[in-house]
Length: 194
Image (cartoon, rainbow, N blue to C red; front, side, top):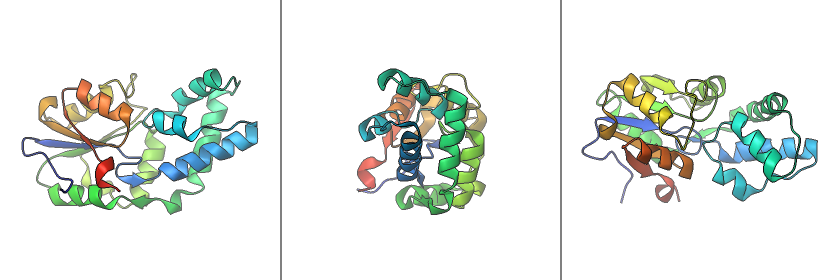
């Protein structure tokens, strides 16, 4: 079975990190570098549990769960700087990119990410996919982030497609929960990326 558009969907929404762009290992390594600099280890299972959560919201979770005292803004800058140092290594995820190319100009498509606008824009440019989307909603554009539905609801609004007719492609539990909460068709891409 191939990853594809649901026949009933009239608008497609794509998560970025881990769904369209193969960035998860680079984000994890950036967090590991921050951990080495501050004397802690970011557990890999926690990293994947929080996939889709904005960095600004991850820092307080790390402080609480790992008994740390990281400054939120300084840690966000440090982690994003570590990621940007390796942005040249980012690759597009083939099966998802195929869908984007196949339906470009046929149905409206948008990106809904927990990343910041600056980082997301650089990531989309690094994989050469910036021309395919009518909108991009980032952590900077909504107050409530995944697993809340706001990111994807804003995408639907910008595409002018009712939420129930939108299909979301996601690799994270937080994002899949957000898509379901928005009343959208939630598609977990992970089984297709093996």
